[in-house]
Amino acid sequence: MRIVFDARLHFPVVSGMSRYIVNLLTHLLEIDSKNEYIVLVNGKLLPNDEIFNLQKFDNLRFKTIHLPHMGLVNYTLMPRIIRKLKPDLYHYPMLDAPIARGVKTIATVHDANVVGSIKKYDDRFGIKTLYFKKALAHTLRKATSVIFISKASRTEILGTHHLTENTTFRLIYNGFDATFGDIQTETIQEVRAKFKLEKPFFLYVGQIREHKNVLRMVEAFLKTDSEWEFVIAGNNYMNIDFTTYPSRVRYISMVSDNELKALYYHSNAFIFPSFIEGFGFPILESLAFGKPIIGTQTGAIAEISGPFLIGVNPFDVNDIALKMRNFQAGNYPPLDIVQTREYLEQFSWKKCATEVLALYKQVHATEK
Image 1 (cartoon, rainbow, N blue to C red):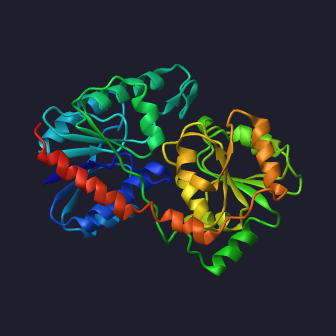
Image 2 (image 1 turned 60 degrees about the vertical axis):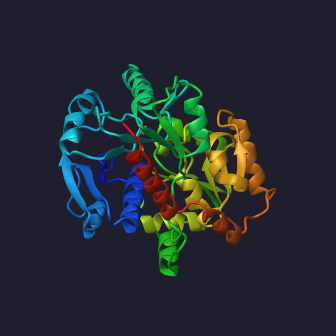
Image 3 (image 1 turned 30 degrees about the horizontal axis):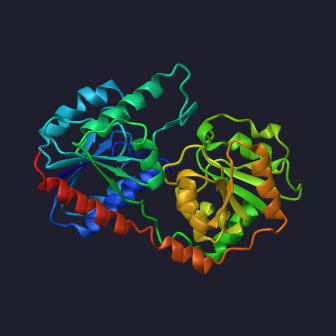
């Protein structure tokens, strides 16, 4: 079987999409040496990018595609390229799959990108919103099979779209690196000194965009115990001027993987009242260090956090602040790291890859 996996959405920045692509491909290739994989990448990657570590697998080859991964070009030119590669199936890891006629297509849909007036991107004129709505509807109608990464995302999306009998739907949870919670003592000490982590603190790690609800997080935090700090790490796409806030709101921009682990280690709780999440890797990262999540009480955040969630209404600053103050006051029992790590065992990249490979075989065996 020849499998074309479209990895053009992998870029040299930390993101949930890149983690999904690299980890899924790595574990697929570790369990599947029989099938041929053609991995499409964009032209912006450097030769030392982590995805090129996959060159060690004999049944894989890369093909660079100098086309954008979204928009009209993706729908008009990509199908021709896909057909020329003569795949038995094509896997596109996002909602706007370019469907090539006669090619069995699997799409992974992480979330809807839009919930009401809340969006994951800057869209002043509504063009992107219209694009994603039309693209998602097209994928749900035309793809051979669609993978959802959480029950919440599946329920939300399938409940608002007209479906056909041509497409099948599968729930396959993302995996998680079981070694993420491993950290060296030297790193712990170095990061503590570098960022002067001397006080108890709440932590948020991730992109700073409207749908992540960072402004409400800060507003809620400023209603809490003044002895605590709020550490925020991530790419500031909203260009928020954090210097206008009191010094206990600390923005430290992007961090390395080791620094990220140390931040989780030193933190007291992870703050995650996001409006839109299809899964939520930071939830699992926080639990790897036995830290609770103060986050959205519904949707994928509640689903993935399981019993370790302190739920909040993401629209209610006072509710977020109340749960923060209750946590500071010791009103929630500390988590048992043995229990949180046992919970994480259900999120395995090997399990994810095994289920995806089984879907590949099932789709390949069906009639077009």
